[in-house]
Image (tube, rainbow, N blue to C red; front, side, top):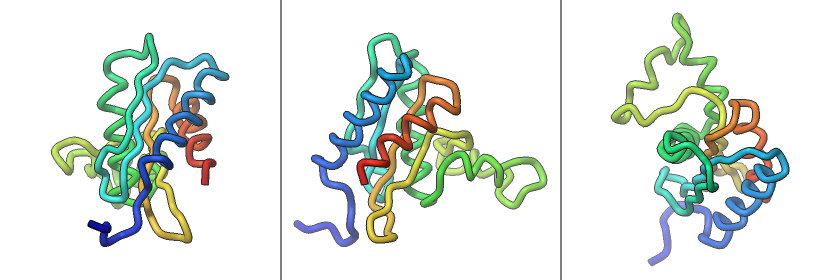
Length: 137
């Protein structure tokens, strides 16, 4: 059955995961990496040896958040601050929405096809690793 909306293939998701791990290795960061399809469904996941246990769900939820909102989680962080228009959004979707950096949507021809989420380093490291994975496209 062909998906109704374009999404990442398993091969593309694996390539992104491999690129993220290579970037993390170069930065000496132990992390978890998740890649989802356009609806936030998990396609691939990898956890480095030594990555802290809390990074597992955070990576998955960062990718989920970036996919369902078609926005980087770092951009949502600004909008979720007290007084901002999306304040409290992190409490939606059963608490799965993450509002700090490390989740990046993936677009092909301007359409959301998936997302990558990284957790385990600093926010800046997570963003850099996720962006390296996104650079596959």
